[in-house]
Length: 522
Image 1 (cartoon, rainbow, N blue to C red):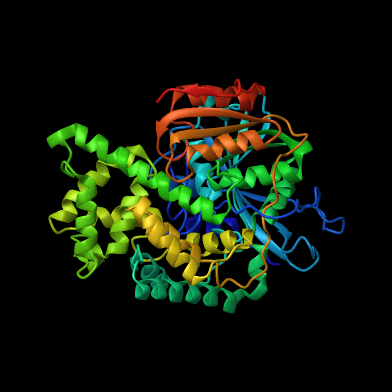
Image 2 (image 1 turned 180 degrees about the vertical axis):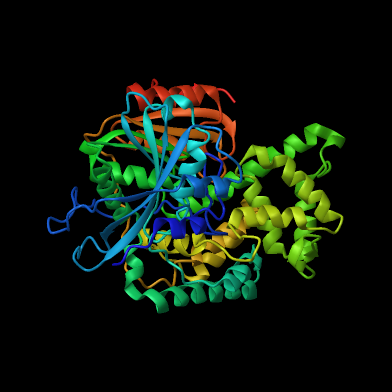
């Protein structure tokens, strides 16, 4: 395989630099949680016939990062971009290779270097390259003084042999579609859309789609660890990145130095349980937003009853999309209104924007709602998308061995619509996504990571995307799991609060984990 110049492709990788520490951790509209508990454990080492670990070809790309960020870097950082090759199929390791794209941020003030801190933002489908930039610009200086910050786009994601099987226009159609199918006709339309997604990807990739799975990505991580020159892995993973990190620990427990798993996905729940948990989590998060708005009184633009306002906007936008004063003459369908609200619940910092966007939409201008929706889906100003949706669906379906009939999903829609009136029908309908997926499945192993070093698991009590109970369960199931709790709101916790940050820094640098069950106030 001929390598692409890292300079020539970096601009594309940085089209939407993620400056938030949590990176891009959302899942596709209506899709089940990335957790998909599978059958027996995988082998503990790569196939003996796997090719030797490939060196990483690094090039300086500091200027490109500065250009993408739009300003001169305030920190004394140098960035390098690189590529390396990994086997396409670890069961047939000589049957071709994928190219992985990486970025490394190094402080010129680094002293007593420990090694590399490998990072993953979640999704699945989020760019670790973008996240490494954001973390290098925001992490505590104590970490930059001891670690290189290394992000990689996992196989199938971003610039790492990306899965690209859905056109921008089709993604627009998916995002604009009815978000809460309830009638038989609406459910049939959702099933048709899911079938079209599957057909589009399978027509292009065939059974190769099965190669884009979490277990293979965890094996890739071990090859990256070796190529980076680290005897053991130091890792920071958010959301789905906790599934990836715990899978790595299960496969290679003796190679774990320190893993921080923030916003843990519950390893004990199957697709059905995970989807219902997310429905409950987002319902709770919206209630917290609404309560905050109500407490502000007249100062909150969304008025005294934000939930009623959202229902009103969804009802208005279904027959007649709400026009926007933004560029391109776009309008917000009920699907885009739904996504805008959903995306804003990932972070409490976005609540003021959500309140303002709802009020503006009520006045007839959906510009704010569309900005929130585009931030969630990754849609760029020119109407293009990264391959987040393609990769998210491919990886979720490859990781799961479950499927559901249309009649089963209709039953869940009716049930969850009563229990979770804003999000239940949407999350239930997402169970259709992988029902017609025919590519090879690679269900996740059960994970206790027996024999590993202590693993720090962080849970946020008000996390809508990965409900807090998932962190409790993961910490319990990992033989060396240590639970750290933040009594805050939003998705993931590090480095949002000093208490969490101090605990994580001490663990990563000195390998001193906090006491199991430690709680940090909001």
